[in-house]
Amino acid sequence: MIEIHGMDSQHYEAFFIDTMKALCNHAMKNLTRNNMYSCFNLLFECNEMTQPNGGDLNFKYFPQLHAIVLNNLGCAYKRINKNRKSYQYLKEALSVIFKYKVECLIGLTYVNLCSIASQMGLYRY
Image (cartoon, rainbow, N blue to C red; front, side, top):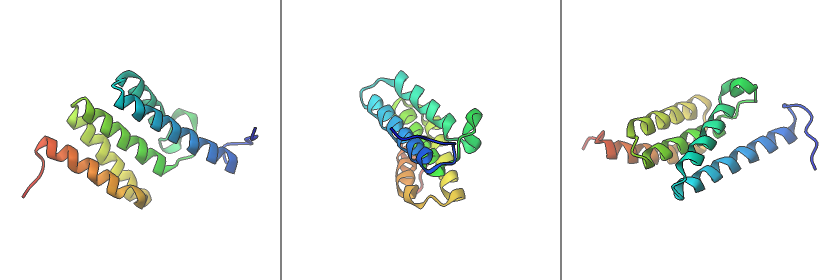
């Protein structure tokens, strides 16, 4: 068992990142199983914990995790045909990506945005 001493420790950071990724993966598995209630509950909790200033919990901010959660929320809302909500979460993810230079998620986010924009008829030739 790893002892975690304070929220600034490397062990805490690794544990928090792994936990958030696992929760996001579990949420998306629930999405593929049409267990929408569980999917959204997990993603809303992850979104709260990955906010700047850690939401109410004062967790350290990890912009990459926040952008992943926002992408997942966008995908989940797209799945239930809440296209505007999906688009909002994806635009927010893009904002985080550019503000904090999270280059590794630019492609994924643009693919998700293009998909929802196409579904909403927000494209030009």
